Image (cartoon, rainbow, N blue to C red):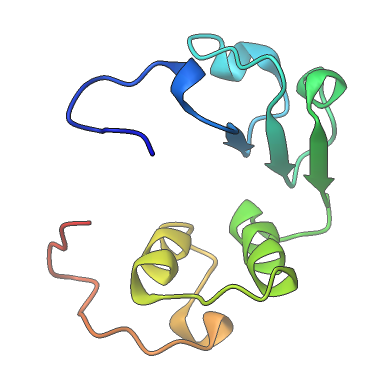
Length: 110
């Protein structure tokens, strides 16, 4: 488990998931050696070093791909997960099939 009371280093994580960034220069400050890539753009050079790439250029948003991964893994889309997915403007509570216990117009601390 990573303690977020300090600034964690990349070595403290089991995996780094990169969203919506097909090129290494888009994440240059982090530079994970073997990321998991989830993206809706045409493949760039980041897919060459990724251990796994989940890509679909027909997806309306990367959040749709994340939702597919969650559903395939049969993980629950909790309100906090749904809120993170809703940060992508193309996703809606109806498309996630989840009832949020909060109003999105109000601040919500994760």
